Amino acid sequence: MMLTIGPLTISYYAVSILTGISLGYWLVVKRKDRYKINIDDIETLSIIVIPASIIGARLYHIIAEWWYYKNHLYEILTFRMNGLGLFGVIISAVFVLVIHSKLKKKSVLNFLDLGAPALLLGQTIGRLGNYFNHELFGWPTNLPWKIFIPLKDRIMGYEDYDYFHPTFLYEIIWNLAGVGILLWLENEIQLPIFLTKKGVIFAAYLIWYGIGRLIIGFIRLEPDDFWILNDGQIFALILMFFGLIFMLKSENGKRKRL
Image 1 (cartoon, rainbow, N blue to C red):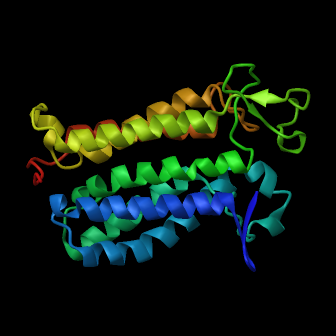
Image 2 (image 1 turned 120 degrees about the vertical axis):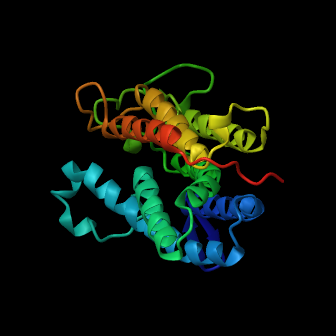
């Protein structure tokens, strides 16, 4: 689905992603003082992280969908806003933050904690694009919140079904709840001491998103399942594992309160 403004035509998927990026940036700027990070660092990182994340998302999508691209090599360099993989965003964003922190001799955990709720908020808004693209839906269903998927967008083998689980909506709700939880953890003063250490907000993000993606993945239709799990669920388990490591290895020292 496309949005036309005068001579400009842009997909609703792209609008969703750009809106998610904008709101994520706003949330980072709003909370920067808590982590003693200045606006110059945020602006510099935005110039690097955003393009790197898009490139990483594209690369992850190509790797995950290699069963398709190996027979359509000419499409690899074709940029499509709907040809992106979220896990590529996480990998590339974390990589850039680590490199930047090393060069600036600053705590990478501060940057990761600052960015985690913003990244999850961006994911939440970006998932709206899946509705407009009629993608990332689940098993056929007749539940009241079912979504109609046009025949041309249905996965092979499900052409005779009209309505499906809106798994992208389930993920939106899960992610939005996660944003609230992460911000609550950031502000709550009566938490056990291990939940106030540097790195815990990012760790909680990895665990929360990983759990949601793993569970929702059992409902979501995928053309490339590996036995019981699909590639997204496998990566979700990896996120949860690293989240637990971050939780256990997070640095001492409470964050600045506002």
